[in-house]
Image (cartoon, rainbow, N blue to C red; front, top):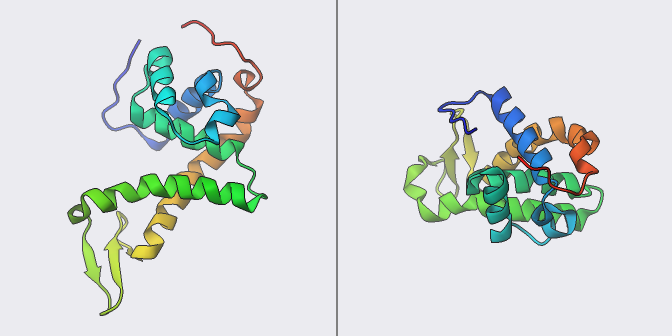
Length: 158
């Protein structure tokens, strides 16, 4: 059964993310060794075929599971994760820069107005977005480690 939600609440999004992560952890494309190689078409296809996830949700699940699999104490590993996510977050700035209100703070610094109305320097915008992406993931990351699907390797039929 598919349910479309026009404007989901944060709690609903967090619940959907948790369920999708638990489901996708069972898939071959979302194993730890695959996650470290980066987001792939195989992840999109397998999650779409098995759980009917769209590409955007598959990417979100990938980023959550990659964060879970990343050891933050290993600087190179955590940096690789951040660079991967920032690369995706940077795409709108490359493609449709005109969508973001640009504010000239001084003759040398350009800034962007973020949703809350706070003016962020350009170099800090991606860090700001990454921080807001990681916060919700950290809340249910321990639950993912305890979920029954994290130890199961077979895909249950739907």
